[in-house]
Image 1 (cartoon, rainbow, N blue to C red):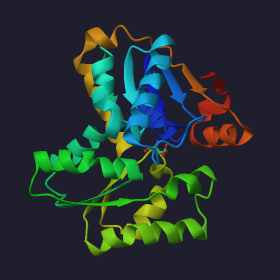
Image 2: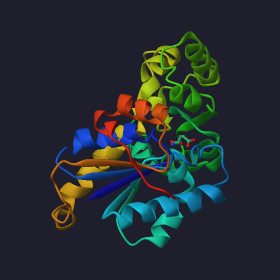
Image 3: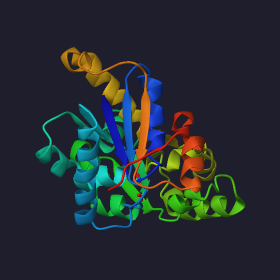
Length: 261
Ligand code: DGL
């Protein structure tokens, strides 16, 4: 099975993209709703949680692991790869690959949680591959709570998005990476505020393409993964609100299963 984890239910945007790309594969999702958010926490805490999340999925039968959370991908990937001997995918490298392999983007903006932006992982990876690309970042800490409140199309949300994107607009970016699980849900507002000419890279979509290519090129691994098209969604805490939001992001999430930490 393909295991995917996130700090909460925002990562269902990544699961949704993965399911669209690989509909036949069985998917296990774990959202750490009891300890979310990760984006405001220290790297040490996020690493500890990420290792615990991965263990939960492996115990449930995951044979490959997807770190759906940008914050955990930024700070915990190295430790996860040291701790678990299995294919581990994160959401950062595929988005970076899309940027550096394309000659279009010369001025790239990155938005994410504070932890993701402060980790410098996106910035360092882009610079290492293409020193000619100028990278600009903007942490957008209020967007996660706004999405979790379901304020996807409110005037207040539009204003805050505009305010966060303004410095990137001044830098005349041509490409913008959505470096957070929640931002695909605000994609239309983000596109409207940053401008039509800016290409938006959704890290959930680039990740899915990478996993699909990997499985196509590694049939011995792909053949071992079960393919009944089932999707089980586990969370460490359930409330009515979490359940409602989860089903809005992904239809299959209408029956969340609780795992006690
Ligand atoms: N999943 C987180 C991310 O993609 C956003 C929510 C949080 O801060 O935990 O960075």
